Image 1 (cartoon, rainbow, N blue to C red):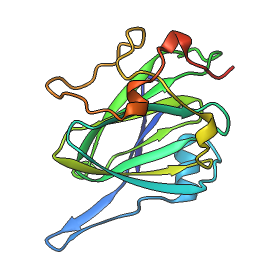
Image 2 (image 1 turned 30 degrees about the horizontal axis):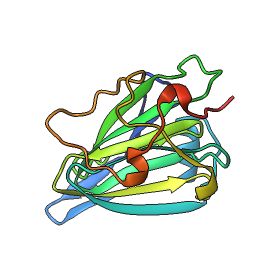
Image 3 (image 1 turned 45 degrees about the horizontal axis):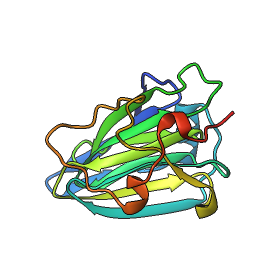
Length: 181
């Protein structure tokens, strides 16, 4: 496995070793010991989630203000642009974002620690998005920041009209959002 700390060093791009031949491929999608070494953390994952979305679906920017979730995300089928936003008020990278393309071709994973808002947009006809979380889903504590917030100025891929859920369309501006102390 190869790892790269992105412009926000707590967010780590993970490139698993893929063994492939004419029959297909094999990769180890998760190994606790290797993950801990690569990220310098010791989180335990408690929940796995799987979503399927059509081209243009934008999910996010989500987080939980209590029971914050770290997320290890990857794409099993299709391609997405994945974004993490640092919303830890005392962090030197507070209010900054990083993004990475995740796809079935590149098999990359992204570690998004607790204290970050997270979102993605589907670039392919559809995408199966998988994520492991470090805490359980807690709808009462779920929050959403607007995907197109002017302060954050996230560079989403051009030429795709985002399709949002009603909840995501009602996200808060970054300046009004609850953040982590």
